[in-house]
Structures are given as C-alpha cells and as structure tokens.
Length: 416
Picture 1: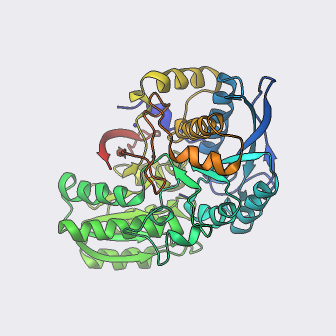
Picture 2 (picture 1 turned 135 degrees about the horizontal axis):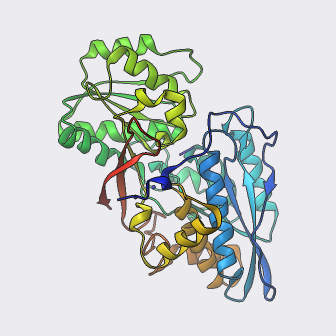
C-alpha cells in the first residue's frame, strides 16, 4: 500500500495505529521553495499521509522538499515546484481506491504537472498508472514492489502488466526491487539461515500482500521448503486464534507474513505467539509492510521480539557520496530518516533529471526517465530496464528485539 549495518534510529516510524486525525481524502500540502527563472513546471507526490504509514511518508515528503531546496528548484532550464497529495482517508487509515483515482485525474488535468513521485502502495499504483498512462504522465515510485506493475512473474495477476499501459507505452518506473526478489530472498533466508523446514504463509488479501506472499510461495517450492498452507486473513476480525490453531496443527516450524501491518497485523502477531508459540520456537518472517516501529506497540514488544523482516532498501548507514551528504543534511534539518526516506529523494532526483533533459513535454519526460543514467545518485547509480525496474537492487533483513524499537539490521543481499 506496498526498499540498510544501520543507524538504528533510521528505522523509527513515528505513527501509531491505522487511524488518522485528518479529515482529508485527497487534499494537498506543502511544497519546496524554488528560485526564479525558466519555465515553471510542477511535480507532485502521491502518498498515504494518514494511518500507520504516516510517520514514514512524512519523512518522504520532507526528503523531496529538501532535495528541491538543495538544487534550487531547477531542472535544466525549468523551475520546478512541488505539491504533496494524500491518497489515504482518515476513516480507512490507509490508501483509498476512490482517492487514488481522483488524485490521478487531477494530475492529468493539470498540464503543469510533468511527473508524480508515487505511489507508496502497489494497489494504489494499479489504479493511478493506467489513468496517467493515457496522458503520458510519468510516475516514479519510491516504494511499490508488486511484480505485475512492470513484468510477469511470481505474484503477478492475469493481464499484468499490459493492462496498466493502455497507450502501449510505459510511463511508470520504480527505484526499488520487486517482490519476486523479496520472495526469493525471504524463502532462502528462512530455509538456510533460520532452519525452517515447513512454512505456513499468510497474506492480508491486499494487492501487495497477496503478491509478495505468492512470490514467497513459489520461491519456497523452487528450493524445496515445504509449504504447509497459505491463507489470507480478515483484517476486520477481532482475533485470529482459530487461524493460529489451524497453523499449529499443520506442524509448520515457520510462518511468513506478506502484507501491511495496518490491516490488524498487531493482532495477528499477538495470536501467533499466544497460540503457536514464541518467535524462537516457531520462526516468523514478515515483509516490509510490517517493518514499522509502530508495530512494537500494536503487537507488544515481547510478542514481536525475534521476528525477522525484509525490505528492498539500502542500509542508510551504508550510503556514500551524494547519499551520505543528503542524509546528513536531512538529519540536521528534520531528524532521523526512515527506511524509504532516501528513496523518495531518489525518485525526485530521477524526475528532476528527466525534466532537465527533456523538451518540457510529458512524452519526453517519460522517455528521459527510461534512459536515465544517474551515476552518483542518492541511493547509488540509477538506471532502468525497459520494464521500468531498476537495474540491480538489494533486499535487507532486520530483526525486532525486545528492547526495540527500532528494528535491528542483520544483512543485505544483492538481487537483479
């Protein structure tokens, strides 16, 4: 709905719970200061600013503002302004289908907008990208990982990815590795590092959660890790004790969860520990939608302790060059970054680079995104293949400790 040896505070996610205090549905806020001169154009971000992701997405908005300030709001001969849009609602506490569609239509209608940084959640991208595609409006996502957005593979749905590009020309790229890689790394980690012999798979039934769980399942089958079962949970259920009793009866010695913690993930983990056993006895590995510091409160620190989590992002402490300089400046101005903070700035960097090399038309901005060749990028070199996926990437593994938050970085694996 939908990236790390680590400065541990870089994983501090400040939101608590899935609710929100705002009453907005799409709304807009903020904008980076820019210097004058040159034709005025605009970029926007499309992120869930309410609910359990809000702490993280607030840092992403700040990162985009800071990057534009650092470059003086200039992209070649163009002056770039920025506006932040919310694709979540307070009632849902997460991204909202109708809001995503309405936002995309706004961007298409505003001809000054040459690019969108987003979305955060893959399900929202599946709604927005086709609307924008017919208007040749570029999207660069800092966080989407669903396989089917860009290519066929484990977890992709029938008709993907072509159904998102009715014009026949791609307009979407992302700066993080997709879930087929996360599924492979996670399955291998459970089997080879955690010693799991039989795994039960859970997903939240959302586009991202189901996709990454399906990718994990295929990878598990490929490497001979027994799959004891695969079930989606009801986010509105009061508890999951019956489900956990079923998992315990399966004899699985490991559980993989694909999804977003906002969908009652805290209760899922509470009942896992209560019924199946603690995370030393029955290993638990969660996808990046659960790698949130707010989960320590929602699940309880003792219940979460020992859980492993993965994310397609670089350890912020390992950034060098432009990335280290950027995060140093970010910390000085805003405080600790989050796991996707630098990736929001990287997405902005890709868009600004494309606009600066373009003739100012939406079509040419899209073309320039796809032939990007950023050598000293905020998260390292950045180029894309013909599908819009980054050339190379990595998946990092973390672990929740009883004394947390934050999550402790364990290791990273190169992919792609």
